[in-house]
Image (tube, rainbow, N blue to C red; front, side):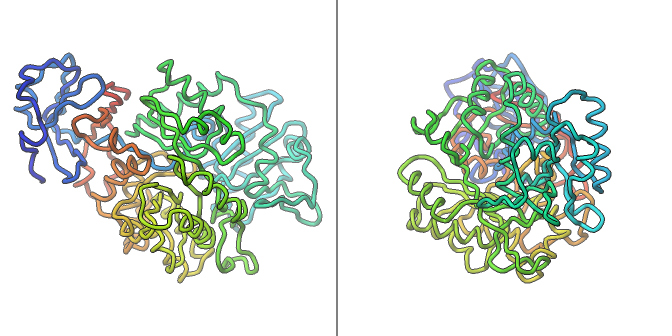
Length: 541
């Protein structure tokens, strides 16, 4: 065990004898996640901030509190930070048909029918989470059955990665989609001259924009439901990647009314409305719980739907290499727009071709070492020649460990064994800058941070597969993983002075666990329970 803090270093209480504070936590094992990863026993909180950290004797002798928590040996960590997620999208998914882990298209249809039976009406039927890689034969479905079941109601069912959807004929007709229609960065899939209903990447938006606008009540329901579940898993800060100004308006209003207490770092979507909004023209937006200082750019699609842009063709689809969702000229124009601002450019890039294109654009504008903290979201498949870009130009690879353990069953089919070696290379990426933010990409993956920890450290999924771990040369240590889920994720958002560690002056965002992540056997990681979650010193779970 690391040594406890020295009094002179971490507790400045000489003039604070018997100081009154709001909260004292004692008899805990507190992983501060400070520079030395020191462990303390107790801490004091006042006005939502940490005012002292030290031994039991130091804190109990010098601080009196209205609320005193005897942790009884429980482990305390800084509140977990999800470095890449879709908080609003997750909330929306809680009010749609849950298609996660469906093992056949027939199961998908059964779930839709059950949902409609309990949600009668004539509006749009939305669902999310299907994955053809789980279906027998792994072929993409068509809308034939949806057309027969719902001839008069529009249906739009989103794939698990958010980069493909199935729409029935009613939805396609409302959107005015015709067979043979084409667009940049998207595909309206046709078979035998007829639309199949399968929409890839940008084609999804053509149909989706016809869904009626959400109400204030919708937003409140979505966001508060998402918050409840996230707090229960120990998440206290979430990076929401790609929202429009209206979405942010709703979040801000709910935070100001105290209905929404989740701390959020929000990236604006790369759309014209974002650049004309006050969030951008005023140089960003910062409150106690909200920061808007990034722009989410969409480089390519996803590997699972074969929309990721690859240098060489897909191993399981000769002649096809995926596509970029915008032109290289567009990425260049965004970089030119952002380079002299405080906004981070945060670009989704999955395939090795997409990563190379974006990295070269970043190189042009960043020129060398810097503190712009521009990001590559996912950095999933990289050519060996391209890793050095991250270190040379201080580019942040923002990765999601559970993508590796979800994709490992079929990623080799897409890429082949040799190219797969450059995939999900977390340790290689960490070595570029010496730090690495971690997230989940939920609702693409589950919100559970403990699955992130397991996937990063053991490179295994919830089933304990594979026995020896997947490409273990790129596993992270436990300390690296904790840092990636806390202080490094904060640093990626320029929030490291506010959250991410348990240190004097920072927000009192922390969690109590029933077991110690640094010591528990890997096969027990997913059994860890979050006993309590605190945000701004307030218990929220």
